[in-house]
Image (cartoon, rainbow, N blue to C red; front, top):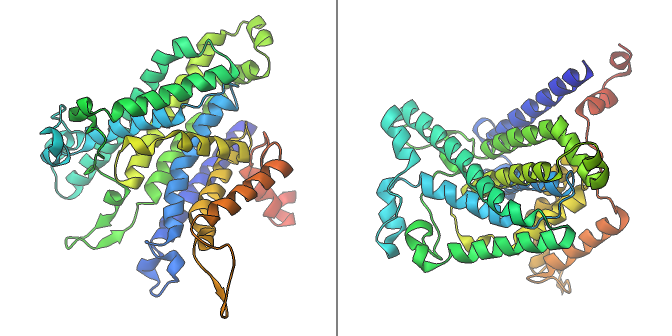
Length: 398
């Protein structure tokens, strides 16, 4: 009964959050003359989109590192697989020759967008349904491809422990990035060039016949998809499989003595984590409007790992909270440190291009020093507890 009540509370909270995102993004349609920070092109919405994507990848890494105790650094590689799968499958056939112009066309003369448009049409509601179904199927297939590769490499690498597993998965990600930039695979991956022309978040905005935006959904879509995926991960963590993952993390010998198959559950956690990393990679491609292997470096994996550590290893809500704080600081709040500032006629010293990252690194060091277990540790934010805390006393007594 208590679990059902918590589920309803969480569902209501997520619904309210999604409705708030839609309202925030479309305030300009109702209130003219809004401050610059609330305009659709402001850094606020850029941060919200990127943070929504990164939060899914951070939670997927936390599932593996925090809840199963497997130290993997291959997240960028699985994101790369997801991004390229989504891009290759959704670029319209008519545009593939233009995208792959250096290689005289693509080896895959097929597009999910064209397939669904052939069924539902490419105008009006039919075109919208075709695009939504194409993107949804491409996202699922992106996760499946990443999960399949995780299953293949899981047999050798999951027999390794600790730092050796981290090195092996990091090496896999770097090898994968080099292969995808190989010119001989140009008809599939477009070599070192980027793949463009596929549906992005802006394609979900609803427009009228003249092309003017009636309802903006470009921020709502990544929030919706990431929220649904994170809910699935939370349900998994709270299931019997999640308890098995935690027992492996705490004590492998005791877990095996209780009849838990170590390799089976490690493989399951590894594949599921990689599946959602692949979906996150596809969302990242939609966010930046291109897929290019050189973007998925080890630095991206370290960023995700840093977010997990800051939020708290073993806390889903900590990973989500840390993602938004990390992205907001790095992409928005500290941007003024990269430009020269004056107080009257006096130039403020040190402020120049790159100083933002120096200050940002110091802030991260302070957080790690004073919050050794992260912001949340292994605790979770309870929406029910927050509602009870801020509700009037009479209501709480009832």
